[in-house]
Image (cartoon, rainbow, N blue to C red; front, side):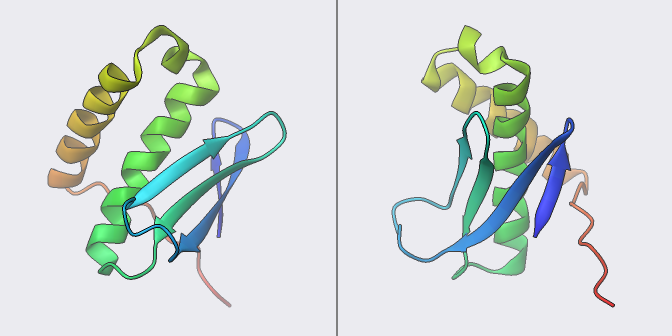
Length: 96
């Protein structure tokens, strides 16, 4: 699946290798991707995807450069938990 965040295409790929990580955003100059563990429930995957999209937003806008890793993670966790609790979910693309 590819999602567009602030004009940047981000590949969302399943990740089964890293059992210590639920998900991770990888931002580069030419490529962005989000890895989400595939062995979680759909609800857990939806939360992790939202969490990583917020990391992507901070990275693409450059805001992450003004934050320590700890502060960034705290902000992302607070925002993603609240958005998820009020029902925000990414709309999945339709398959034809």
